[in-house]
Image (cartoon, rainbow, N blue to C red; front, side, top):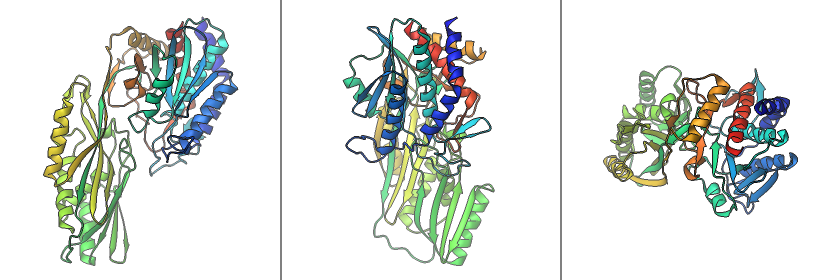
Length: 470
């Protein structure tokens, strides 16, 4: 059985797979300033170079599309089957036990940002391609492993560039950046901002003054820690701290005093914005505290009280008046960035909406909610949903492969709020690495993948690619 040959080859490469994933994690490939040879910054470019060099070392044909994207190819055929991965990662955030870019192996687990999303998937898919190549199995389609350099921002400019410049788009493929047994739908994306300015407002002494807020670094990550700086009398500072301790559970609040300043830290639990309900948003916790306080500037106080009512107590958009649900699940809303300085307020949020939701109405409802909070709404990114028939032959084939490899006969193709390259590629199906019932590791502190799971993923992806290309 040819699949057993794939397994033998992959087991021989297992330690090399682990070592290369650790090396790749050590590259901090967060979006950075554009450079002449690095459209999305030096980090993504360095990780991209790692991937392409690995392809060349193993004898693949490698094609570089101006450092936006690349192909690692083998085989012949008028048609191609594909697998696509990305090299960029979200910022690491706070609260890690292990070094975010350390690439450490501890108790059989590989830790670091990108261990799952998506560097672990790249390594698993790469060695799956290598196993097919080295097995010598005859294929009627070429196999293309496509590498992107910008995925986490949600609009995928690198793959849009690739589609314009490649001479052969795969006619089918997998996207290892999702759930098993396969995904038939990804909700639409809407990223937006609430803004408020209040420059020149006079602050009195009868209430404390809120000087600043800082929280979050990416719209698609649940905020793990938020900070607010107050200035006031000893009595006012004591009241703020007492209120915070009354509202929040033990362990979710920290404080530091320096002269007449009090800094309040709220401590959450990071999660992917596709499932904000499984995290604890530190920005939302902070808004709950602010909702119970009166402070200067008064206009900022009014808006923050309104924002608390709108976004601090739910993740389904109820407070904003945009809640909606269909067969692909409920709308979710994530507060990802939250800031205040001496003359402005800012909240950056990301919605994942069900595939049948009226997006024109949704945007009107958000503008109305912003007006009620004396702020304005700006839409900064729209990305339509992905949907295929869950009974389609490719979805069913991929589901069968997963079931054969895991013995899991219960899981069904899923719809979810994640966003992958599948939404701009024809007949590409999101396929693993996560399994329902397990905690989603994407975008969290201490992101990790087990060494054994990495090998299993590679075996599954080898079978999937073989099924599409034979």
